[in-house]
Image 1 (cartoon, rainbow, N blue to C red):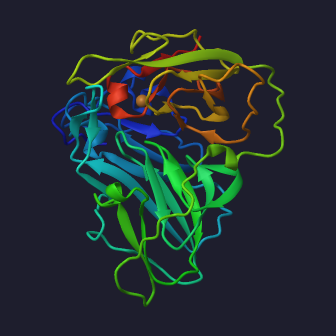
Image 2 (cartoon, rainbow, N blue to C red):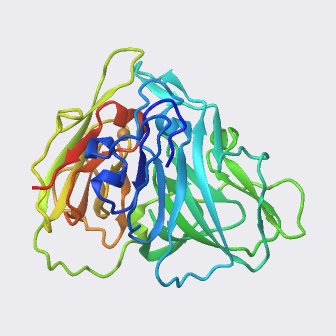
Image 3 (cartoon, protein in one colour):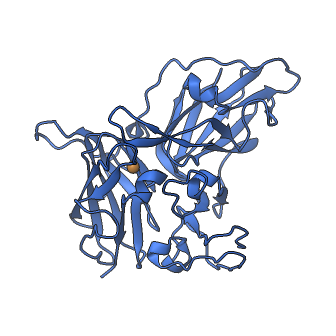
Length: 384
Ligand SMILES: [Cu+2]
């Protein structure tokens, strides 16, 4: 990797089980790449699946830097044997550009964007996805937006979700629309059984109007691409879970409560963020013990949804969306078998995720929304 920019850079290998010195997080100990210099990393890419890489630097108030800059790419780690049956595969990256800070109702600043794209092209500026009737296509959608959640549909077609964050789901479901938080990936199979020229794009009209769409063109069809608003806007992770209870041979997990809160820093400033009352680098928890199972109890007291990301490990979703205001009664039903590396925690809810501490070394945990990570929403797990 060669750094052609004029400032230190680092490349994070998102979703891979790499050692801290090549994971691409300066906080974990990966050396930054100096301007004009080159480095070579050697590692075995694992696990198989749809991964990606991106700059892991800070932007603060400069909305041209870090993830705002669009420095990202796809990384597909093919499995040793590939049972997938499809005729064509398309990789699609969502991104928002030309951000500026805009005040919300309470005066705090948030990024807002002028342009939104798929594979760095606004609707009408790129080539269509060319398909044939009867084909089965596999879409790998990545939300590479620095801060925005996106909803994606393909007009005239439904999408059979086969993997989340590159990991096959226990139960694949055919749905009208995908929702992707920043850094999330969804892989979905589409049966091309409705000839025409269609829009694949953001479901919210004002975002599609900023450019986040691409035409899907059947062979020998032409004309303007048609859009149809999906009938159903519901998204939940639970629908892809396993139906059978999992084997729990590892014993009860060690509980780690993590409470997320915002800190108003005055009108005209972005909010700061805390985990258990402290911003990075002061937020700390007990060191992880290798081989043990951990259950993170994520309590989002803020009014924002947060796409939280754990480096160098995958985690299993266990419970999601439990309202903070809800009376403490029966424990919610566990979700089983959905392995991810990013999950969106809704405002004013609690959620639980589990992982096994099986990759020793410093491990970053943070909100993937660039402005939240820049302003303290980050914590380092250490191994004992
Ligand atoms: Cu956040």
